[in-house]
Amino acid sequence: MNSDRPSDWQRLNSRELLHTRVFVVRASEFRHPSRAAGKEFLVIDAPDWAVVAPVTPKGELVLVSQFRFGVQQLSLELPGGVIEPGEDPAAAAVRELAEETGYRGSDAVVLGSVHPNPAIQSNRAHLIVVPDVQLTAAPDWDADEELSITLAPVAEVLTMAREGKITHALMLNMLFLLEPWWRQRCGDGPSV
Picture (cartoon, one colour):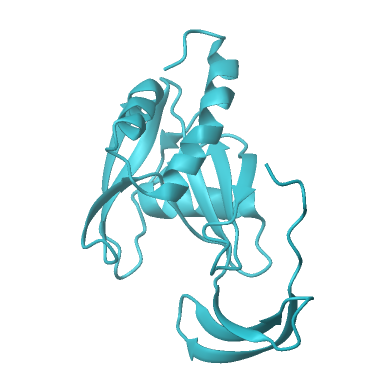
């Protein structure tokens, strides 16, 4: 493995190409330190997101299924959504969980955060578990949301992920961080 550290490129300028309700596309010029001229790259500026692992007292995850326009099919996922400007990621997770599913739980625990696609995106996804969730109200969906809600044991969801039945990369990131949290909470049983 090469031990030389790759160079940091310097951003020279940036201009907005497209502004939508969910992200901004920018043309940003970067220059490598050993080159005289810069080169233009596209960057998507999006707000940060919260991905929620809602765990019931019986050890089940609350899952949602919804149509995703990029892949043009239904996607089995954990609840989540956009973090509003200035909003705490854990508070956003609790809000999104209630809006999408009607479930509420005890104190949210931030397990970590990831860059969804650092090659072209500037945002982060915060991965948050909400334990001991219970159905307390009806969902309050946005105009374009239509979800089905199901419960499945944590071990079964982890197996579904390993079998390719869950394909959303951010959900897989969440499950990767959830598994050790779950094992610690339930004791060091066999890996699922």
